[in-house]
Each structure stands twice: as C-alpha cells, then as structure tokens.
Length: 199
Image 1 (cartoon, rainbow, N blue to C red):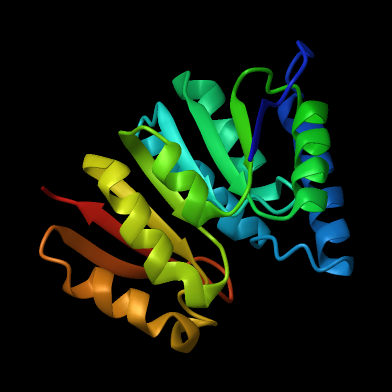
Image 2 (cartoon, one colour):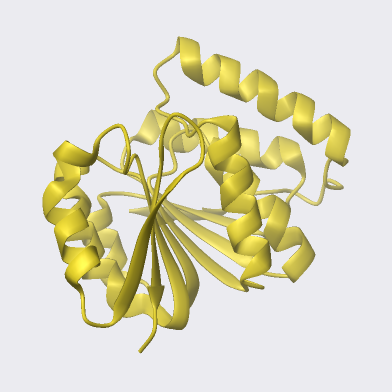
C-alpha cells in the first residue's frame, strides 16, 4: 500500500478552467473505460459534500480522480480533506497526476491498495463516505467502512439505479439497517443510495 498527498503548491484552478478540465477528463474516461460517475453525479457529490459542511471525506474507488475532483471542489470551501482508495496502480497514478493539475494541494490523499486491506488502517470519523467499487464488493466494503462514519454523517453508494441488481445485498442491508435512513436518488440516468446515519 502506498499513500501520497496530491498537489504541489499550485494555485487551485478557477471554476471555468476546472469545468473545462472535468469535461476533458469525462470524455477521456468515456473512451478509456475509467468507470467515472456522470457529470450530474459529480455535481451531486459536490452538493452533498458542501451541504454537509464535510471536513473529512472517504472515497472508496478513485479511478482516475474524476469524482475526487468534484468532491475536492466542495472541500475547498469547507476546509476539509479527502482520503481516496484505488486498487489499480495505473489508475492511482493517473489520479495523482490529474489531482495535481487541479491545484488542490494538501486536499487529497491517494491510498493505493485493496480497499479491504486499506480501510482497516484508516482512522475515522468521516462526515461523508462515497463508495464506487465493484458491485459484488459493495457489502463487504460497506461493513468495513461504515464504523468510520460519524453519527449524522452521509454514506453515498453509486450505481444504485442502473446496477441495483448487482448490488442487491448491499441495498437490502442499508435499507433495513436500524441506524440508517436510506433513499435512492436518481441524479442522471443512474444515481446513488443515500444513507443518513441517525445514531
């Protein structure tokens, strides 16, 4: 497992420049199977992070950093930080490069490795946790990471519309969990399972 902070002191991109960069990154992801969220899903991540006033966010499944940049846009406003985990070394390298280009120095820590092994090494609590890995791993990753979510925090899981059948065990778990209030939010042609930890 390797861990690095993205950013090297560069000033953060402005809104318009960042929008252009994200559009290019999204197009690249579409052509190269990066499994990124849709742009409207990214905006939803930004809104949820900002509205929660999140200071600490955990992302499980970095890919090339596209969703992390959307989250970091909100964290720039809240003064928070993102910890993100990626199992694939090539994608982790791309993510570091893309995150550095945005200028979010010190905002994002990329941890490279198997999430099932990395999560137990991380200390909570987190205000927001975002899960976007292989769907058959969702329940396992949830059980490992949920204890890191603070009371009043929000757990977000992607693909809850288009791939709901592949993550049925996870959806059953969060929808029946006694400490969670869960809704399915459709934010594009896809969406999220949004779970609020009430206690």
